[in-house]
Amino acid sequence: MAQVFEFKLPDLGEGLTEAEIVRWLVQVGDVVAVDQPVVEVETAKAMVEVPCPYGGVVTARYGDEGTELPVGSPLLTVAVGAAASGTPGLGAADLGAPGGDAAGFDASVSGPRGAGGGDESSGNVLVGYGTQAPPARRRRVRPPAPGAARGHRAPGSPSGADRPGVSAPAASPTHSLGAGAGSDGGPRGDGPVAVISPLVRRLARENGVDLRELAGSGPEGLITRADVEHAVRAGASAPAVARPQQSPAAPASTPATTAAPARASGTAAALKGTRIPLKGIRGAVADKLSRSRREIPDATCWVDADATELTHARTAMNEAGGPKISLIALLARICTAALARFPELNSTVDMDAREVVRLDEVHLGFAAQTERGLVVPVVKGAHTRDAESLSAEFARLTEAARTGTLTPADLTGGTFTLNNYGVFGVDGSTPIINHPEAAMLGVGRIVPKPWVHEGELAVRKVVQLSLTFDHRVCDGGTAGGFLRYVADCVEQPAVLLRTL
Image 1 (cartoon, rainbow, N blue to C red):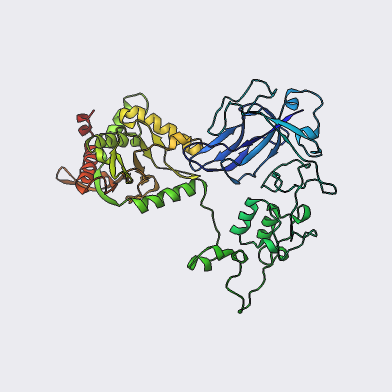
Image 2 (cartoon, rainbow, N blue to C red):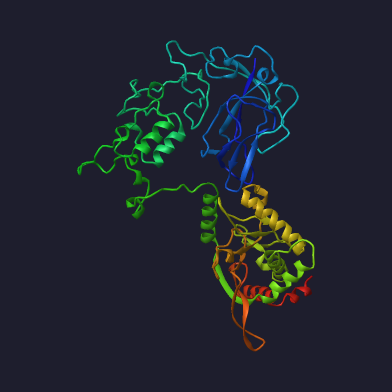
C-alpha cells in the first residue's frame, strides 16, 4: 500500500510569504526522486527551483503556471512506496489516480522518505520542511455517502479539485454545497454561493464578477476557476455574468461585486483600462520604494566631473593584460574609499531605538534592469575587494540577473547602492534610496562635452554624479564632502592611491 504525502510550498527565507508558479518541472504520473526539483517559482526576490523531499509518483499538482500561492499552500502530492520502488499490486486507488476508488483508502503519514519508504530522506532542506520525520499518524478517508456523485467532498474534507490547475484524483471525497446551491447548476439568488476555493473568490472579486449570477459547471453547480475566467472573457454581455441594471431608486448598498471598478475609489473608479497586479518583483519594488518615500527624509546633491582620466586609466589597466576591469568596478572602488572617509553614509536608522547604526562592512548593491524588472544584486564585502575582484563579482551577478538565477542571498544585505542610470542614455536623476540604506550614488552617461581643462576650452568626457542621502544620518556638509571626494577620484584617479 502506497503512502500519499502532500508537499506544501516551503518558506523560502528572507521573510517571503508567497511565490508565483513560473514553470512546472514534473507532470502528474511522473516518478520523482528525493530532492528532485519539481517546480520553478518566482518570489519577490528571485527565481527558485523547489526540490521535493519525497520520492515516488506525482498524483496531483496544485496551481497553474502564473498562479500565486502563499507559503504553506499545497504544491503537489506524491505516492511514496510501491509505485516508486516497482512493487506490484499498486492500483489506481492506492495512487489516488483518476479512476481509483477512495472508499476504504488508508494512508499512514510519516515524514519525508525516499522512494522505498526506508531511511533515505531529503537532505535538501528549505525552511519549513526537512529530514526529520514527525510522529506517524493515520488518516482514513470516509467512503462516499450513498447516492453521492464521485468527485464530491464531504463537509470539512480537504480537496484541491477547484484549486487553479489542480490535477486531482477523480475519486476524491464527497462534499455538499449546502442550502441555496441549486442542483441544476443555474444562477442562484439567495443562500450560500457554490464556491469552496478562496482563489476562485479572489479571482471573481478582482474582476468584478458577481458569483451569485454565475452558473457553475462543476458537480452540483460548483463554481470553478474556469467558470470565472470564462465570464471575464465573455465580458458584461455574457449571459452567465449578466449584472442586474440598477434603477435610480436602487439602494446604495448594492454589493460591491456587481461592478468591476467598485473596489477602487475616487477618480480611479471611473477609469477604464488594463489592471496589472502588483506582484512578484514589481510588487516588491513598489512596496520598498513606497516605504522609502514614507520613512526617509531624503535630499540630493550633484556635481559634474571630468571622467577623461578615469577612462584612460581603465584603458591602461586592460592593455596591461590580465582580466578586464569594468568601469563600474572602478566606480565601486571609489565608493568604498569614500565610505571609509565618510562612514555616516554606510549606515541605517533604527527609529524604535532612535539610533543611527553605522555598519562595519560595505555590501555594495547595484541597480540592474532586467526583463523581469528592477533588481539590486549585492556585492558582499566590497570594501575588501580590489578592482579585479569587483569586476568578476559584478559580471557574475549581472549574468545571474539576466538569466533570472539570482538567489535571495544575492539580493539582500546591501548597505549602500551604486546606480548607473547612464546606461539608459540619461545624464542625471534623483533616485529613491533603497530602504533601509542611507544613501545611493547615481552615475549618468559619460559623454564628450566642452570643458575648461588646464585653463583652456577642450572637449572632455564628462559625467554627472548625484548623491541621494538620508538627512537623518548626516547633514549636507558630510554628503557634499563624500560627493566631492568621489568626483576628485573620477577626475584624478591617482587620488585613490592615498587610500590603497
